[in-house]
Image 1 (cartoon, one colour):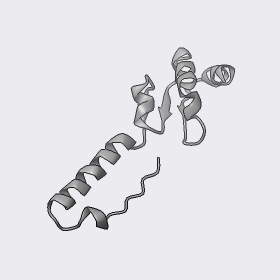
Image 2: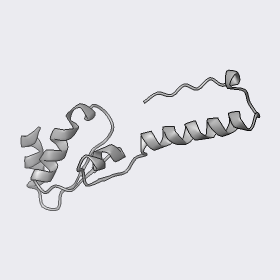
Image 3: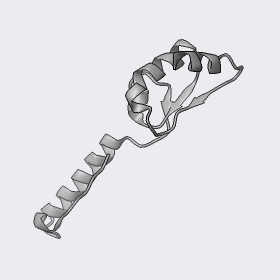
Length: 92
């Protein structure tokens, strides 16, 4: 992977745009290779940027879940719905 990213980085004015799909398991290696080769890289989620990636274009999934939780709590507190009426399926 390091060799591929290094070869790509040698192209003048190159930029790497990482998409969703199988890269999370190699996140640290991909970020390190891009950074070591001074290759600007754009990643799909905020946690890539937080892990020293340059920038991300996708949502912060943790923040999204926190917002959903807060909205559900407001609904329950307002007594507009009962907790037993809710079925929430959240898949990451």
